[in-house]
Structure formats: structure tokens, C-alpha cells
Length: 465
Image 1 (tube, helix red, strand yellow):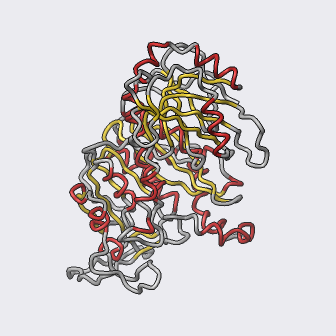
Image 2 (cartoon, rainbow, N blue to C red):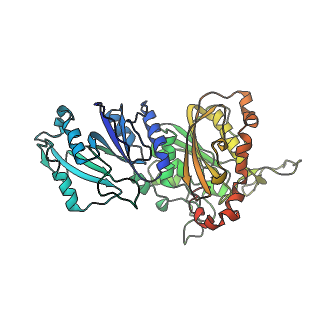
Image 3 (cartoon, rainbow, N blue to C red):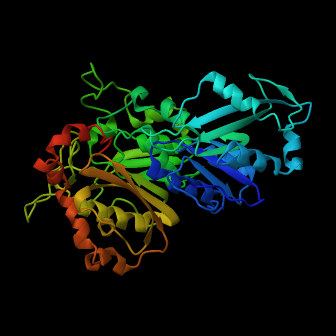
């Protein structure tokens, strides 16, 4: 079990949620980077642990991170720790009294909570553990409802629910500073959203993507496969201006069949703007338009602070682009009418990623981030299958398991240089290019006999594909 450092420097304990384990480290690092702070874990750091001890931060830094994080539950100023009650007692008695006294004087009110990971304690057992802390110099008055200060005893019983030890593996005690934004997952749930589609991105994942992209107030964010705008909702919540495009006319304009149960057609006010209005962020909505992601429609300039998207995978949404397989296609002489449906053709996954990276290299500001989902067939996956670009540096690569055969990886890249003419076709000479061309067969592999057994269960995990 990981143990915090024994340094006398101020340390903070982050209590993390047990879900989305692979996304936690990139999120915390990105949120610290917004403050200009590096990620400094204490010695023996364990990424899989639900408790992380960090140093080199101020309380303001920690509050800033918790005001954004959906992977963290709570943060504490760490006063003491140990593998046993005796170790904890020694650690707490060695904590500087001058650091404790501002929160324990006789005019203060306080409360002590007991949190356990991977084990549930009876109420009487919790009271006993609180009473055992009588060696601490509390002089204030207990207030269970409105305390000025909250202190927490946290016990870690490991991560194996089938092998829970009698005694905790590790114990922490500290002063509560702030809670994370887990409540946003509920308040922004797609179930309660005004405008949804079959592939609307899960609220929690949308917020995680926003944090990985380091979205901040007054940024301009773009989604080239915007769908019903779940990612725009998440970005606008943190004060960014949002816009997007999609090739589907009905989705952009909120027309056609509804995805809701017992509702045949979408209502006249079901659209992306209405979603932002629902959450009080309509003023951050720039616009959305019907556009083919494979065709250039933007002026050649760095426009966006971040590009966040979930391209179609060909499972529940087809991968199409405008164009014809005919070599010579005569252009129409007349103007398109509103009901015109352009000819379309298949848009291979490798081409989607190539176009997406090229677009990001040209239209992201320097230091801006691209965050997108990459579907993979797990038996054949290797890191070389992740598309690369000379102007973009891979920051993180996180996996979300869908089944034993399939998963999708959340790729975060950062623009590190302006593109040159040769960078446009650089992927053709890259030795990895043939490897990520294998994504073109993802749909066939997904529906292959090897994956049929779990295919039905897999489908529900594709929030937007």
C-alpha cells in the first residue's frame, strides 16, 4: 500500500472516486497546469490508490482543482497518517501545534467525520474511532449541523471487495478543504436533458474531456462532430464559448425522429441552443452549422483554444462524408434547395483521424489541446496505433473498457508548433501510419464472431459513436 511522504512540508490528501480510474491522473495534472503548478506526489505514489498525497501546493491551488474535478471526491489538509492507530497517533502528535491551533481554539465549532474505503462501519464503531482521537487538543464546541471546521478520519481497506481486511491498510486524518464536482454528473445527466440523441455523450465523460483539454473561462471551443452538443454543454459550464459542426442536417436543426421513449418526433425547440439554455449557459453559445469534417470551411488561422470531439465509429452512427465514387461528377447549375441531400460516401476511420489531426494542427492556438475518442480492438492494440502528427504531442492516453474485445481510448494532444507545408502529408511517411489504418476494420471486428457474444452489452457503452 502506498504511503505518503514523511516530509514536514504541507501536504494535501485527495480522495478519488473509484470509477474512471484511468482518467484521474490526466485530469488532476491538467487542472494543476491551469494554475501553473506541477503534479508533485509524495513518495511511493500509487496511481491506483483511492488516496493521493500531494505536496508543493497551496490551499488555494487545491480549492481550484476541486472546483473543477469530477474524478475527485474530496480534498484535505493532511495532519497525520499511519498503518495503525499507534502510527496515526504518533504522526498527529508530531504535527506542528501552531498549524492546528487556528482550527481548534475555544471559540470555534467543529465536526469529525469517518470515511472508509471498501468497507462499511456500524455507527457505534464510527463513534469509537472518533472517541479514540481524544489526545488531539480540541477546545472548541462540537456542531454537527453548521461547524466552522470539519475534520475527517479516512481508512483505506484496499481495493478487493472479496478480500476485505479486518483492520485498515492505511489511516489518514486531516482538515476538510473542499469537495469535488461529482454532483455535476447528476445535474447534467443526459436522462434529464432537453435535447438528446442515441449517441449523446455521458455527462461525466464530457466533463472529464473538458478538464483534460484545460478549458477555461472565455476560451473558444470547437467540436467538429458535435451531434447533440453534450461536449458543448460541459465546456460552457466552465465559462467557454462553444461552437460545432456536424454533417447530419436533422441533428443540427433538431428535426426528425426523437430518441426519447414514447415520443415519435422531436419538438420545435429541441436543439443544442436549448440544452445550453437549460443549464443557464446560452450566452456562451456561438453557433453550430451543417458541415462535412473532411472539407475545409474555415479560414487558415489558429482559431480555437481546444478541439474536443467524439468522431463516429460506424457502429450506431455511420461514418460518411460528402462526395461520389464516380470519377467525373458534373456540378449542378442550379442552387441547392433546402431539401437537397448531397451524395455521400464512406469516411474511413483512419481518414477521420488524419483529417482531425491536420485540422487541429492548423486551427488550434499554440498550446491548445485536442481531446478525442479512439475506438480500438483490444487483442490487436498497441500504442503505435494512436495517430500522430508533427505539430501535436500526446499528453495522455486513457482506456475505457467496453468488453474483453473492444474499448475506446481518450487521447489528449497538445499543439507544440505551427504547421509547415510538409506536415500536411507527414502521416504518409510515418511508420505508424499502416498500424492505425487498421482502425478501418473496427466495425467488422466489432460485429465479428469473436465479439458477437458480448456485442449486445457493448452497444450500450457507446455513448456517442
